[in-house]
Image 1: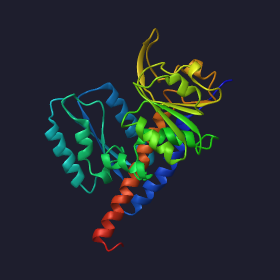
Image 2 (image 1 turned 90 degrees about the vertical axis):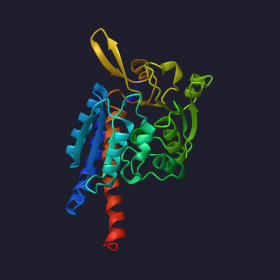
Image 3 (image 1 turned 90 degrees about the horizontal axis):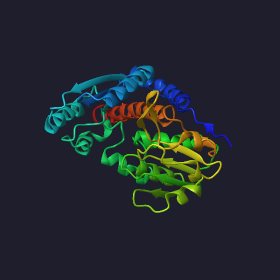
Image 4 (image 1 turned 120 degrees about the horizontal axis):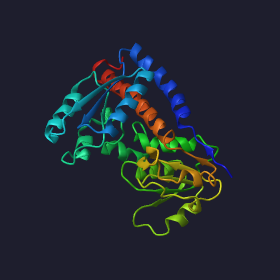
Length: 296
């Protein structure tokens, strides 16, 4: 069996087309969506994310401003920057680029962002809303991974799914989103026994751990969907390359569908960020009109 390789870039383009149409509609109403990105210190990973986000924002008609701060900035100073952006009606979404210096608590910063400007979907309120199937501004990576599954000819209702990895940002939200669709979900983590046994009985496997080659062909049921969310930089004789958490070549011989890295979940994640940007803008517009314009 040879797996169908899921084209995340093509899926992202379809999402972006709808986002661009909504962004244009908001702009005509005087609410052109605008994002502000915050980076601290010079890191290659953050620079890559910023370039991708800037490019996708431009394609969708969304304003994008990247602000770079020195690694010496304090958490208090950065909190003040976020407070200013929260109060600025011209800013509709705030993105915190990772990684951050160890001295800066990313959770505290994420909590400082106003929930209506939380386009990454990582504020505690946004994460908590998933339990109630409220995905107004859900976490982008988790939504992207589940959206890819929904695009496959598999009915999520009753589907046996194994999620390998239970981080607050990806694994846990993925599990809750899948349960909201009616899937039967098993979540594996560092203390789980027989991870391979859980994976082998699953119709779909999601992996987000940060360990290259963790999932192998022997861990998959023939024909299962494999959604690889991992992003790892490894050195090869040809130079550095990005790989996922699965051994792509061997898994592709067993799986029915598989996401490549790069080109799978990543592009859809950025598209979800843009989708959240227009959603956040619309929510702020409606909040403003309800409060100050009598609903007009």
